[in-house]
Amino acid sequence: MPVSSYIHRLRQKVGHDLLHIPSVTILVFDEQGCVLLVKDAGSGQWTTPGGAIDPGERPADAAMREMWEETNLLVELSHITGIYGGPEFFITYPNGDQTSYFMTVFAARIAGGKMRPDQVETLEADYFAPDDLDRLDLSSWKRLVLADAFQSQPQTRYQPNTWRPAPGGLRTGGMSDYIRQIRAKIGKEQLMSPAVGAIVVNEEGHILLQKRADNGRWALPAGGIEPYESPTQAVVREVWEETGVLVEPIQLTGIYSGPEYNFVFAGSGDRVEVFSVIYFCRPIGGRPEPDGLESVDVAYFAPEALDFLPEKWQRRTADAFQNHSTARFYPATWQPHHS
Image 1: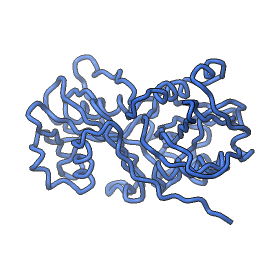
Image 2 (image 1 turned 120 degrees about the vertical axis):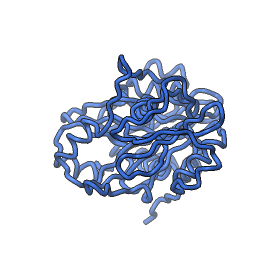
Image 3 (image 1 turned 90 degrees about the vertical axis):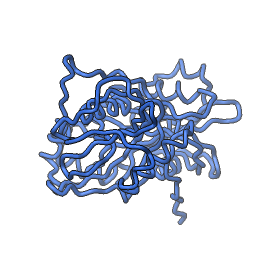
């Protein structure tokens, strides 16, 4: 399929400037444990099936659609193997367009269809054993994703955190340079925005909340992912900036997105569609203290005392305490249109 109307519309306003794009890729294995790859029509390289998520589309639906469009295969998604981002997922295309992908990776099995590359995005499709991958010209992000994919235990994996607070404990928050620069060019137009949220639980089992400076309401620490950082780095950074607590991510518990995650910011009128990745974390340093910029108060609350939180956050918190090895996601409802 051609570039989505959403990306085309943004490119008309930002030119070749960096775009942070939510995307999906799909991993299908045969009975011998070989993974399905497709040959990309643009680059001629082998890659995993996948592509950008459309506005209003959940990651699972995007995965189903992309797989069908590229291979003519209908799949059933089993679990999320990982959610990724950072320098490995930065691409400069031959035309000069710069893109940083925020990528949700699904494991799936074939449920229907007959494999037939579309000859538009994909030229060939074949299965490869782990040893076969060494002879392929694979980018760093593909090798990272595939290394996690060949792990035998179904589990949602995440990149290790490498972010550390600045010397002296300086905390700098607020709007990122990326958002500021892109908003200067697109105005209030809808922007698909990857974000993180943290369920931080101390030794007493209490949950860390911040009182937001913008609306005076209590909420869990959360914020946007920068184009050059992994989601794991983002969650550690955001919790530190907003609460003064240094955390260690323990588990990636879910991704939440879709039409109900469209917002219009009251102060600016900016439209945003959020893809929220939630981590279960434990505190390992610092002390609860508001930054005065994004938060005006910080405190731990007992889990049973969180009924004042919005329903969406109560759901995400409940999911985090289920202690599943794989991340929660909204199930796919997409079906192919048959003529």
